[in-house]
Image 1 (cartoon, rainbow, N blue to C red):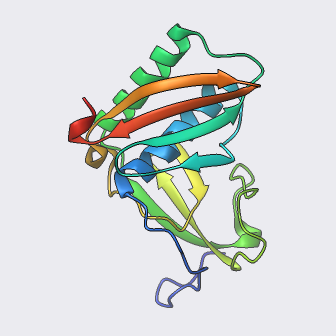
Image 2: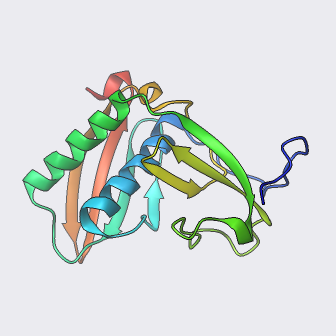
Length: 161
């Protein structure tokens, strides 16, 4: 059962001021990594205007060809101008394929699902662009692999080329 759209849903207070293009790119990158490597969404991310970094546990380091494929997929997603939409649902009505493991213990009963086209959906109270074209561009600036953790550092926007 959906939440009544005429009443304002009660969500947790958000204490971060994200840079919407980088934060939306984080959603796309998490989905891309999960689709390619089956690693799930990252548990560790630092998202900023100048550069962002995300870590995933992986049993082996991705090859240069796989990293290039991640870059190409992300560039295509940005160029695809996918819409970013929101849906408010009660926690017990969240679709089974939407992970809730990153929610805080005190998360509200009403959750906001963020959908990016048909590519990604997750519960999130952060700031996002209205469509992926607003990200501007996406560029992986570096990667590293240490002790089973793969890190991607990236930039978004006009200055990322």
